[in-house]
Image (cartoon, rainbow, N blue to C red):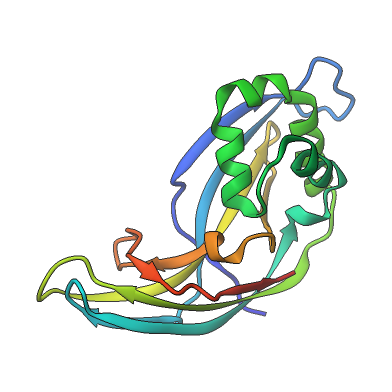
Length: 187
């Protein structure tokens, strides 16, 4: 089972745990990262030129979808599937404060869960951004990483919306234009 390489955080949010907290965790630091594996890539030259990026990544990770509280929140607050939708919902500052206890419970459930074997089949078309400039594109999956106040780190993924949680990036980690994303994530 290969390991994902994590690209630096793109965004970070800190959450204080609720006052009535029996877990000993006083805060969570949450970030999104892109998980990549070597060998899943394609070269494309110039804006308007499209190349098919197709390959499979295998990994061990925690599943956000295994949290009962997360499932309840998706239904109750109309949160879309996948890490990207949950991240967007978390990013609205009123949600972070208003739903602090539920968010803490989601993170606690995920941190206490076992890693699962997963795979992502990245299948999309990718384009360069500038005319006459070759780009080496690699596929990625969006990962949510949580770190508790004791420094323990947990990586999680969701199978809820693979088209939003997969994509392609250039050699510098910049997202590239893509289309016809038929990627799948199995956890």
